[in-house]
Each structure stands twice: as C-alpha cells, then as structure tokens.
Image (cartoon, rainbow, N blue to C red; front, side, top):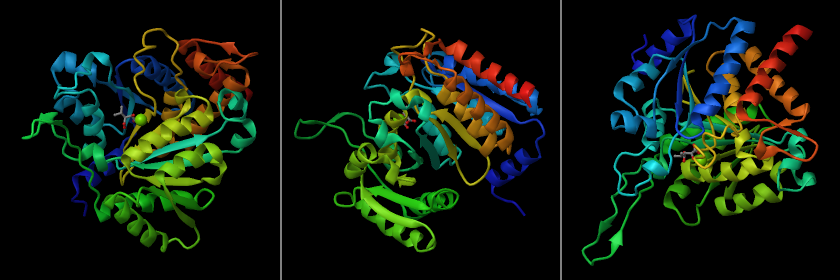
Length: 380
Ligand code: IPM
Ligand code: MG
C-alpha cells in the first residue's frame, strides 16, 4: 500500500487523462519565453491529442510585488496538483537588495526542495547547424553530447545562510554552509549511472576533494556506487580541472555528476559550447514522474520586454516535460524535430545570429516552430 504522500500524489497523476501543467512565467524574459513554449505545447496538443490543461501562477519578484512572498502557499499547492511545472525565470535588479529577507529565488528553491526534485538534468548537445555560434573552435566542438546531472536540493543552496552581520571584533561577515549526507550523494550519483547506461556509459564525478570535506565524502560515496555499475566507465575530476577540460576537450564527457553549485557554474560554461545560454533546457526530477522544467538561463533583465530573447531553451524544456513527466516521447520528438528544422532553415534570435542567417524576434521564433510542427504533420 502507498503511504508516502508524494507516491500517492504520483499515482493519481498517472491516472490523469488530462495532464495539468503549472506555468510559472516569473520575471524578466520569463513571461516572453514561456508564452512561446505554451504556444508550441498547444500546437503539439492539437496534433497528438494530449488534452493538456494549463494553470498559471505568479512567482518570483512579481509575486513579491503582489503578495509579499516569492511563491504563495496556495500556488505551491496548485503546483502539487499538476503533473509538471513549466517555469520561465525569476529575479531582477528591483529585488536585489542584499539586506532583503524575501528574494525571488526563494520560489525556485521552495519548488525544488518542496517537491524533492533532487536531480537536475542539463543536456548539452552541440548542434552542427549552430557550430559557428560558439566562441570555441569547430574541431573541438564537433560531436559534443554530454549531460550534466546537477544535485539540486543540497549543498550551499540549502545550508542555513546568515545575514550580513558584525562579528564581536567589529568585522562585517557573512556565512554560508555546505552540507551533504551519504544518502543525498548516493541517490544523485545512482541517477547519473542509470542515465549513463542509456548513453555512452561513462560517468565523471566532479568535486573539490582536495579542499572540501563534503567533496571527500562525495568521492567516497560515488566510488562505492560506481562498483554497482561495472559496465559503466567511472572517473573523478576536480571542479577547476573540469571547467578547463570542458572547453579544452568537451567530447571526453558523457555524464557529469556534481553537487549543486558546481553544477550551476559548469552548466553556464557548458552552454557556450552550444553557442548560447538561450538554447539549454533542463529537467528537475525526484523519484516519481512529477518534474519541473525550466531553461538554464536567468531572467535577463537587460533584454526583458524587448522581444529578442531566445525561447528555444524553454521550448526544448517543454519537450523534456512531454518525454519525462507526461510519457509522450513521440510528442517530445516532434517539438525537437521542429526546432531543428527552423534552425536548419537559417532562422536565429539575436544571441545566435550569424552572417547568412535570418534574425527573428522571440514571438516569430515560436511561430516558426509551430509552423514547422504543422508542416511535419502535413508531410507525414
Ligand atoms: C539556475 C539559476 C538559479 C540557480 C538561480 C536563478 C538561483 O542560475 O537554475 O541555474 O542558481 O540554481
Ligand atoms: Mg545557473
């Protein structure tokens, strides 16, 4: 019998014939990119009869302005009744006061932690059509296809933070703490090995074991988990070395597994292999099907409202949602193929524009993906 409330909620979700998606657009370019992803999901819904329903809620800075908190309890509860969450981005200079106790990012952390979404999957695949958009040389990039498995509910992000305070000696200080437990490390490393089995069977565990005690535990646990997967090649790498290896020879990687903040930093770096932060999707999962899907980029306040943001990372995140939470790999693939067609036809948002390509605004990029979906069906 199911007793865990999360397992019960998951079982109900599997019975659901009308998948519910919580759309949390957030701040900055969040609403712009989410609008395009929803447009694409609605088009795919018509073709594949997914019967999707959308529930919207305000989070991040927008929620702070409206309700005084980054996400309200009732909106969190609404998300719990959904099958998956599609999230844009949160944050902006308006809410950046270093003394503030209420911050837009708290919405993200509550969703990630509250739904126990400990596994953040960030695929980084170099698209040969876009190879010129990366600052890295083509011969280094060709064939790069890696997956960063970032631990998402532990480490510095969830250690008790101090306020900025004056120590008794009069010096101003602040303290963050980093903690990891054996089970937290074991479950994320295990996820990485399972995923590696479906790929090229190689796991690189990234840590800073020469300095951090949490990393020494991480390495110990990862090495023990690796023994259960003798068919998967396993190695360790220090995070500073990894950041260098990612641009020196990215093809050496298949699955990278690492703690929360290292994963955050390495994926911004890795996005440059693909050409733009605006291209990388992500999925955050726990033990069940429920997931949170968001682009890896932030709210980009500098370009918000200009209609120039790249919506592809969010559109591709919605494809991951169909595959991983809604059991519709067929519909996911249709979106990915449509995105590829649009790029192959030479359409680009400003972040990836190059000589000989056609620059289009955010909404036009969404429309082009929808058109490509329709053409694919017409051709079938
Ligand atoms: C990400 C973002 C977030 C993170 C920020 C907005 C808190 O950078 O999802 O990578 O650090 O996790
Ligand atoms: Mg980040």
